[in-house]
Image (cartoon, rainbow, N blue to C red; front, side, top):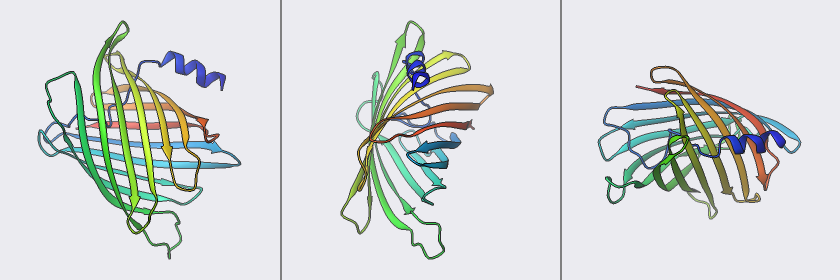
Length: 225
């Protein structure tokens, strides 16, 4: 806990480049792979994620958000389309997206994937600080499995800092409310370092602040083409 609080102070201004209201340039590709290992309550879990964005045009970004957890055997894959709302020449940005995909919470051969609808709204703003330029994003998602009455909600607030030409500091507050579970709040700081043009390595932590007792580590890569 003391380590997480220390990192929170170090990474007070930070953010992530793999989402938010900013569109990808036409033809540009962003790809991220990550693997997390964490403890939550009395079990340990491994989680693998893939995130992809492709710039269809100046106003449309196509993406894929997929992942798999080992302990519960859950799998998900959501394809989404994002477009900006309102002016694109101001300091702030606003975008809306619509996602459609499938979720399966059991890896047995008889498990049937459930169709999932996932609309989202995101806001972002570039900032200048005494430590360098950065940005703030707020991303909200509602996830509803078709044929069910319950809806899951998620909201992530991220602060970002370009600490140097090849180093980014990230502080993210993750929150959510899923059917059958208590609402949660997590702290997720990380450090992203560019080791070659368009190639980044991400090292991060994760700690539950409310609603859960998750503690873990994350390693990932960011690739831009």
